[in-house]
Image (tube, rainbow, N blue to C red):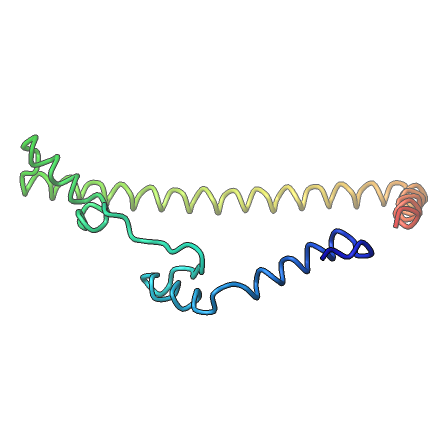
Length: 148
């Protein structure tokens, strides 16, 4: 039943519309019912199912249970020692955070100083040769306008 007067694109579109008309109207509802949790994307042809790993070991998802189990097996999970290590790590993390913010603000200050220096250099060049500066700007403007 192909019409030889239709282009291949139109024929393909007609075939796709025919396939859509022949699909089961309840497929979307079945996809919604089979998909859990509700925030997962819905697919009428393929549903996503939670893996068996999550169902068997829900505590291992974050990894903390494995770390504590490994520490217990080596005997390094002494309460006082563990707490002092955690306190030390938190203090080090706090220091690193402070140093990172200082470095970032220093980099911003250096960047601002460099920009001011470049602007000052351009101003000095314009003051030394105003006609040259005007002709350079005119040439750049003409090239810019010609390419647009």
